[in-house]
Length: 211
Image (cartoon, rainbow, N blue to C red; front, top):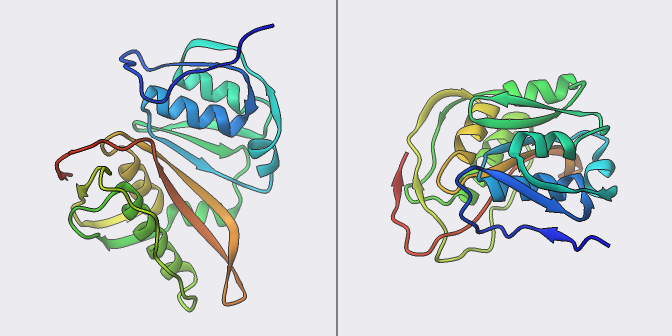
């Protein structure tokens, strides 16, 4: 019987290869590939979330390149992999008009406070998205914080789409993954869409980085 091998997140990996030899979900492999290879990833979820989040199968990847690992994760799921600059983006084979509209939504003068963490940047982008699509709904901004999170000074962006901003955020520092979910919850009785940012890791005593 093969011993499960889920390679550690914090490893020296200059060749950006992925080892994943265990039973897991597509999302398990996607997140592991991102952390091991330190590659920025985007994920657009649709109604077939069950196959990404809960359906398990056996994987046997040893030293695979990151793109191949992601293609194996989404094999026969109805999703495909696209290259958007330095970001690998996983999308449904058939995007809905709503998904296309959210990704292409143009935001003007997007900015955040100096010294923001990647999680902060994601919260602000999600807030701007909510303001543009559901301006009458309220929201709360709160999250657990740590004193070892990377901080960034994110220059104001005069004009860019939601996806362009999300791609830029997940390329910062130790990299991360953005996830777009349709109808992820409700606010004031109305369905809401969310764009979440998941940083890959934290570093201690890191300076604020100008971006």
